[in-house]
Amino acid sequence: MQPQSPFALFSIDHLLSEEERAIRDVVRSFVDDQVRPYVADWFEAGSIPARELAKGFGELGVLGMHLDGYGCAGTTAVAYGLAALELEAGDSGIRSLVSVQGSLAMYAIHAFGSEEQKEEWLPRMSAGDAIGCFGLTEADHGSNPSGMITNAKADGPDWVLNGSKMWITNGNVADVAVVWAQTDDGIRGFVVPTATPGFVANEIHKKMSLRASVTSELVFTDVRLPKSAMLPGVRGLRGPLSCLNEARFGIAFGALGAARDCLETAISYALDREQFGRPIAGFQLTQRKFADMALELGKGMLLALHLGRLKDEGIITAEQVSLGKLNNARESLTIARECRNILGGNGITLEYPIIRHMNNLESVYTYEGTNEMHTLVIGQALTGLAAFR
Image (cartoon, rainbow, N blue to C red):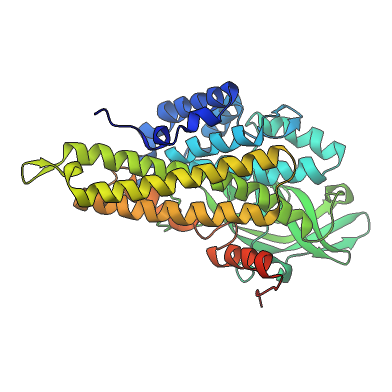
């Protein structure tokens, strides 16, 4: 009997349009050519050619691909999700570069920026000529962003920004940062060119996860900005949280890409690896592991596609995005760990992608809202009672 791929077992292609399959295949081909041959070395070195990759992604059309106008492709949410899946099948850090660019920095400007801000930044960002980052999380304020201490004070015709942000993807290579700060008018967003005096990005090293990604601390010391730097279209936490929902939606698809790559690698390995005179794929315990993992992967994909269709209809809710992020990040990490086990000692080497995916998914499990916070979002939806405090 001919082996089937996990998604083929669920006939996932049957649920996709011809255009969606074509976009997925183009992104998969790019990842196969431009990411897979090099990403283990990038991970080991803790360094990536971010600008070259951004330019390549711009030419591919995936930066801000789900946004309309200003050089953006205006694809469906499902098409964007499929692209995120294929990117993360290469590496979570690579998907993060694209996600932060399009779903956080570009989305914030697109949704809440002035026409001048959109015209100045979005065409360059969609082309990969300018890289963006998104400054919300602080060292002492992760799950509770309302407690942020970064602030912007009005000073004549200007704003003066002080404070810091932590765990910022793309920070050291960014040309522009979307920064959220306390003001006398509540939390507001600011478009901050990184060349502005007083802006400093410090790259975070010694990471054991997302090593093929630039992660930074941003520090603002009397950063003087014109009044026009403020995003005029939103006030309060609704702004950054709506951006995070965009990114979380991509993660609901993206994490499955890492899990699929782990499962396909483990199946291929088990078919070749012999013990006791037969391939280990032929043993019942191994097949049970594969069956369980394929079920969770397929169910996660069906959930992600359903959420994508809801998003394309404009009726998705934040609680539903939490369902996708919670389930798919959790199950993908579980799959990666089990696949690592199937490879035994070989599972810990970068010769195979599984340990890299497993380490990355430890971060994916936590960022863009921790597992615990998404659990409580769902709990509140089910009971009507908030248990965050």
